[in-house]
Image 1 (cartoon, rainbow, N blue to C red):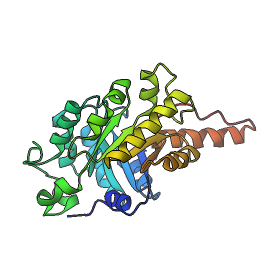
Image 2: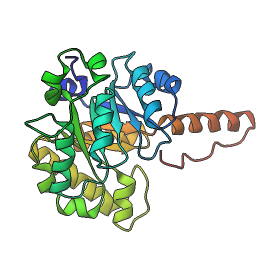
Image 3: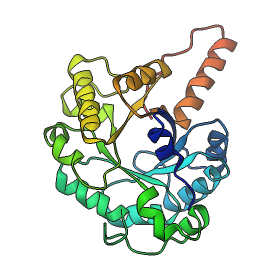
Length: 262
């Protein structure tokens, strides 16, 4: 089976960078894949991507060594299993708030006896190789999003779930749930403290940790806190920011602030 290069990098002690795909296009996914990201995530939660387009985007990512991930819309076994069957090598699942929810998520990603994933890896055979069913449980990443005060309260219980590979901090929703303004690159002390509490707990449990960021400087700071992977913006935001910069330069005016999130 094709090796999961994220797992390899983390085992070697190397932090990885993840790109984010919100534009529903195989071509933009292919362009992003050529940039050198360690992994690329197709966003089916807040992006405007449907299932069929997601499949073509995974095919585009597969032309490179970037590891294909999918953020599913919700903790629903059907879309989790279909995304894995399409060739995703990891699932990011939003709003995991309890041990029971995390167990349900992990089970949907694992073939029996470790889970209840239904068998039918139609494109995963092509991407992963003919022995995919034998080794999938060891290669597919389960990544639970920690992004609410409810999840913070149940953090140790969530992190203790067998088969959970990583957690992913959604800083905007986390801040929102704490009554603070949502957004990336948080400087609000209470939100920063919560983020650092999450990564420290992940380290104690031997679980990898990721964070969505808005700038390289903040991503590097997060790696210094102990995060194993960081995401920078998204394809849509990168295009918007560069386009605004060019238009502003042509009109001899300052470029607008970064703004936005995804």
